[in-house]
Length: 322
Image (cartoon, rainbow, N blue to C red; front, side, top):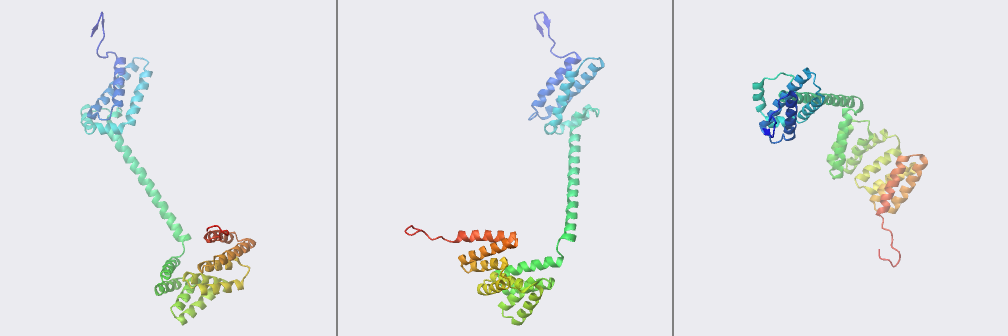
């Protein structure tokens, strides 16, 4: 192209010009990859040209540090956007590579293989992590099952007891009795299933069986006090409130210094609708628990008392509508 007396070439002729031109075009292509399709392959040819020209300039002793920095930036951008590049190039990359037959050091021609290798490595890493996690879970389960978990018969007995309690609350006493009998057979040294068997047998009119089960439960509990409190809770679950009240009062008479008796009686009184009586028992339970250093029972009593007090409707001042 002629301009006045000067002639400006339309293409770059020196190696330095060719490097700069290739880098300029490469940067533009990288900025507009999306939607370019197979045309993105021209970027690989431009990078070939830039690499060859830089090598030529370095051989001549030319300072190309600035151009090298730009070329490294182009390579870094391509690596960061290689997934997008491959989506645009698709199978055209394979065809073009077969024609060019580049050396392996021109890695930009082998981005598809690089991505496939990375995916394979990622899958292997995840497989290893999953395998390690599975092994740790197995080890954890083995340790729990062997050293921490209750014996199998205890777990089965617990399952039967849970079923029995559910049946009892539904009023299905025969089904509940069968479950507790199964639990007692599995854990004959546990007094709780025997006590349930005794109470349910009594409710169903099986007097002889009830007496045998009561005797077995009494022998397994540490004291008559513990026996009575435990039977109170079962009777409370079955809504046999008068019988429950009778048992808990016998327990309190046996050990009036224990807050557990008063706490248990408060539950019975609450079910009977005597909220003020329940509050009085909870206050006594809290005081006795505090004196005995039983912080757990004290906290339970105070929390229960707060809930019961919220249930009580306070009388309105005279002349003021409630």
